[in-house]
Image (cartoon, rainbow, N blue to C red; front, side, top):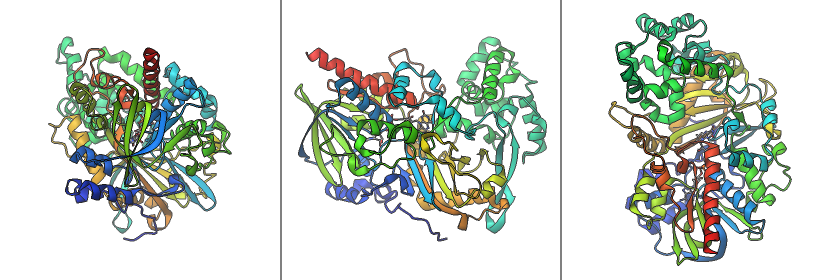
Length: 634
Ligand SMILES: Cc1cc2nc3c(=O)[nH]c(=O)nc-3n(C[C@H](O)[C@H](O)[C@H](O)COP(=O)(O)OP(=O)(O)OC[C@H]3O[C@@H](n4cnc5c(N)ncnc54)[C@H](O)[C@@H]3O)c2cc1C
């Protein structure tokens, strides 16, 4: 099949396909130079984004083959602070450092991608005179009311008006627990060989806990009657599936047994049926969602607890939360707007006409202004750091590869706001125990795809809202947030073009014996090895299956596809089946983030929390460590 979609995945998976180990360093670094896309405005690029071609090959050569350039040309550049990683954590660290040290503090940010923001990635489309935005990675400002003072303070510094964000959004469909949404299963024969979907609209998250007419909803599911009977019993809360256990063993059971085992052994459901409970665990833990314990599943709102009297407080709390709805807030391009606000603060010339919060989503950044020697803060993209070391007690040297050239800069201080797993390769001089701790967590791979659609007629006939697809490549299909925050103009109605947002959890083969770490590594490999053609095929089939009966024709209606693949996605969060309970201060992320002289470690990995506020808090901690170091040095 051939479609009129720009493809920019010409190097997709190249390092894997050729095997970096077979190349000499000279060949390899020459090769990566071709992967650097010299572009003016990265947010509008389509095809494979996220961890795009050109961003990962240098680091893989180092991590997999121990290859790095023999020599680095020393640039005549010295900074007060060098920050590795221009995601939210690195950008926040830059802001905290500048805020403390003043506007003249010289800061360099280095990032291996062609855009800033890390996971906070913006996708931008232009079609029929409209600008459309998509969330390329990090989605929402999650429950900011619960944040600590540092992260809340940063929102204040950036002028983020949380009340306005609340008021500017229609009900956002994503993970909306108060609205009805569709549960969809491939099955019906559709047009031109695309499987149609059976779709049942209901308030599923509440029904599953026994609220509302769950019987009718379950009877509509394409499942054999005996399976439906068991689901109805499960949702009803009439049965305590652990009633044969003494009370003392019940708690141990829910913490040490997988939810899948509970559902198959205790509830008696078939393996195929239980897929309907895994969309939320997978969105929270990626492919490791298959390894949630009974307790973790209950906390995520999965059914089973409502028949257990001793968990009645938990059941009420979860149900109350589902009925109250989410307190999360959205920019139209997800948390990319926050990254943009930070860059605007740090390098005003990159967005000279931008006021701030009120127009951040609508503004166009000048990427040519990010790295100017006349500015105190410089942000250098397409730059993969391959090593850093303290020289004497006074200075840190940072080696990186950019456009095939190996160069180095120096700084008084360095913050590593990259991935924990990369740090042992960058700093081989760290103590072995610290390197081991840094390697412990496996980042959670995910795929976030935005599809530009010519008009919204088919989606509005579907009824709008979120579609949950337990058995499809994309677990959730929804619309980009319809919010005017940041000056964005969302589609005015179905005649306007729209963006469909699809959340994919990479598939893994599980025999049941793999740990969450095993599953995540397997999924990471799958994400790198999957080509754009395959992703495109999946998108077309799934959307045709969902929307075909409403007049959608993927060949003419799809105008662009942007696949943001995140092989190194969420920070690893500990799971009760596979991770010990460490004493306070002894968990791997706590041991791994120990300061090393003039080098401190930020990034959400260092907090073992895959959230914006964790990334911000980590940025502050790392800066505070370095400020204290300077004071100690006198
Ligand atoms: C798909 C997805 C959805 C998410 N949704 C949410 C959400 O809704 N709400 C929420 O709060 N959080 C969400 N998160 C979690 C998100 O990770 C954090 O909120 C936050 O954005 C992490 O920021 P960070 O700076 O710590 O890491 P990152 O964003 O990963 O930034 C680190 C940067 O360092 C770069 N880097 C790594 N190695 C090197 C090197 N050697 N040289 C140079 N640069 C390097 C990386 O490529 C990256 O650009 C989501 C994450 C993903 C992947």
